[in-house]
Amino acid sequence: MRSANLLNDFAFKYVFGEDCKEANDALKSLLTVFLERKVHHVVVKNSEMVKDFSKMKNPRLDLLVEFDDRTMVDLEMQLRQTQDHLPIRFSYYLARLHGSQELEGKYYGELKETIVLVFFNVNLIDNHRMCNTFTLKNEDGLSFVKETEDRMKLRTVEMAKLDVNKPLEEMNEQEKMIYYFLNCHKGIEDSKIKVMIESDGVIQMLEKRVETISDDGWKKIIEDFRKLHENEERMERQLELEEAHKAKEEAKNALQEANKLNQEADKKVEEADKKVEKANKLVKQMVCKMYEDGFSLEQISEYCSLNVDEIQVLIKS
Image 1 (cartoon, one colour):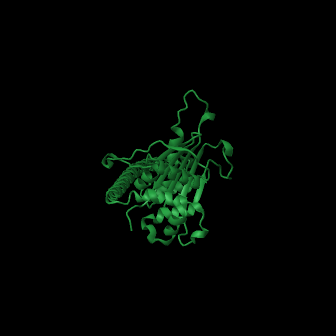
Image 2 (image 1 turned 180 degrees about the vertical axis):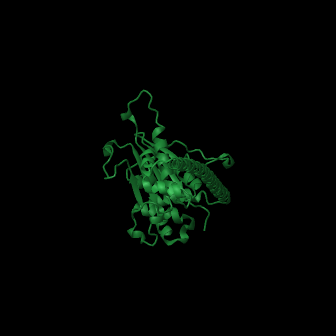
Image 3 (image 1 turned 45 degrees about the vertical axis):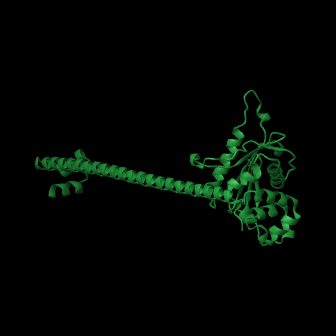
């Protein structure tokens, strides 16, 4: 078993993005299969490989490619086996790519099509399709713009949905390529990989590219980059812990503020009760004084707005 693994985004970019004819041919085959459109010519806009990982705060080894008609495609292999924030992340990639076009002095109708094509190995979309295309639509599925004018598309490939036990002869081109991505590290030890290498021109092309990263030097680079991803994940977990601690402190402060408000409210209620008690005491004193001065209960009632029974209770208490 060899070290090459196309689920590693560094290896993925090398195989499909290196500035050479072989990589470009492999890239055209990949895009033809998963965008379901014939790709005759494509230019990689960021073929350079990152050399110093230590300076990368948030490493992304996506491929930014451009077709003859200036359609832009952001192609990425998502290494992590997690669903955390993936939809938000992919939406951001698409918005950033679409917004990167230079429009000064141009009409909006001149905006070119932008596509984010992302591969990941988790189940995310609630259907049975491995490949899904998302565009702007409303709650009833009505497109915001005409299909021919739609400039933004998100194309997802959920590799985890592949039935790896499906007979090779029943697999379509997308399934074959994903099977190769998932198992290329096994080489000819895998019977399906062996058959594809012997009989499938596209897989033969990919295999030649993969073979160039199967030496010890690439093994070390790939391992270093794997560790970098693990470190990034630890950093994110630390940020999540800090956010949780911050939320806990905010909740604690909110509780203290609520308690303070409750105490102030209790204090106001207590003060109001004292005022009521004082007022009742004054009313009692006045009723008793009037009664002692010879006023009848009816006269006192009319003057104090109290009924006779209430007046008698005050006099006797």
